[in-house]
Structure formats: C-alpha cells, structure tokens
Amino acid sequence: MFRTRVKICGITNVEDALMAIDAGADALGLVFYPPSPRYVDLDTAAAIRRAVQPFVTLVGLFVNAPADDIRAAIDCAQLDLLQFHGDESESACTCFGRPYIKALRVREGETLEPLIASYSSAQGILLDTYVENVPGGTGRQFDWRLFPQKSSKPLILAGGLDAQNVSEAIRSTHPYAVDVSGGVEASKGRKDEFKLRQFIREVAGE
Image (cartoon, rainbow, N blue to C red; front, side, top):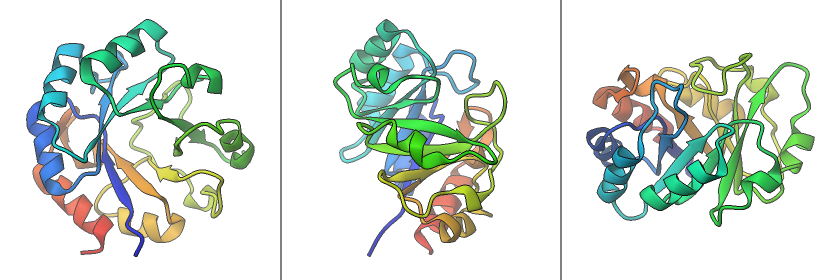
C-alpha cells in the first residue's frame, strides 16, 4: 500500500528535530536562507545532524546560494538531500555530489510538465505556491487542480498545509510526499508538538 511521505521543514533546533522524528517525520528540512525567520546557522545545523536518528533524511534548503555556502552546509551538516528554491538551473543543482529536489512555484495558467522535465536529474519536484518575491514559506495554498495527475518525477506538495486540510490535499493531488512548515508551528521557527502529531496522523489517515 502506498504511503505519503512527510517532510517537516523549517527545523531550527534539536528539540524540534527530535519531536518531529518521534511524531513520524520521514525528512527534516533545514533552511540555509538568511532572510528566512527559520534560517539555521552552521553550528545549529551540525547539532541537529548529530541528533538525527537513522533512516530520517536531512534536507538542506537553498535559494540562489553561492556554491561555497552550499558546500559548507553539506560538509557541516552532512546533508542527505539538497532542495533548491530559487532560480537555479539544472546544471547548478547537480554539481555538489548530492541528490536534490527542485522547488517550482505554481501560478495560474502555467504548464508545469515542461518545467519539471527541465530538471531531469532531480530526485523529485516540490510544488509550492507562487507569491511574487517570496521564494517559499508563504503559508498559502495554490489551486490543487493545477497539480499534475501524472508526472515524470515524484511530486511533493507544499504551500499552506496543516492538519485541517492535508487529508483533502492528499485526496485531491495524490502526491508522493507533503511538505509543511508554518502549519505545524507554535511561532515562526518553533514547532508545536500537538500540531505536528495531528498533521502526521492526518497524513497517515489515522
């Protein structure tokens, strides 16, 4: 039976990382984008890496970051997977010796499959809501009818998800995985245990 995977993004501390793992998260996202309220520095990222238990994927999120900064984060946090949320070309995503996913921001009237196909080396594609000048973490959902029903890549649904709408989102889009940040927070950068557990229970259909 197919199981929808869960990535908890915007982890900023060890306590929240362990809480998300205990709740059943498959992957944790660390934001290496300084303007974000969920940004983590290298020391914190290294501490989270040391705390992460086996079989949990640690993902580093970058937005048009200098290559040296990406390499520093990979070395410090031993990232399993990279997530590119900016205007990075496919060639820019492939030069770090790590698998990656590419985030695409969905807007009305745009055909997604050619964009998805342009990142043929990606492990998956994350679809998030388009908001001008905001690369992600908007807390807004896009029209799920725009989510491709067939794709050449595993698709990850993001954008405005929480425990109240994630079951409907999964029924509507049948994603490989869902990605949540603000929808399971007590405040920006701090996760809420009840919201975390409720979200993951809803994804699991419990």
